[in-house]
Length: 111
Image (cartoon, rainbow, N blue to C red; front, side, top):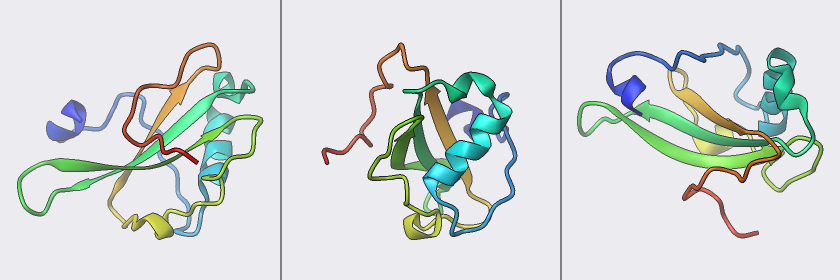
């Protein structure tokens, strides 16, 4: 959030042009095309929407779901539109290699 707060984007920014009905699994595939190290089976992808806070200066984060390379998951078919993504929002994707535990997060929901 610090990088967004300064009016910048993370140095590892990847620009993706997609549709509002894109699923998290489809977005995962696009990222894996660009970052070969993310193709390893068991790699975790945790998604969050970063958007302008209308009540105070800065940004807010809404954690929306996760996917994993090589495995089907309950969030795979979730779309950007279903999570109220709006044009101009950022999508933050935390990528965790399979040999490490996924980052601690409030967005990990019990299924």
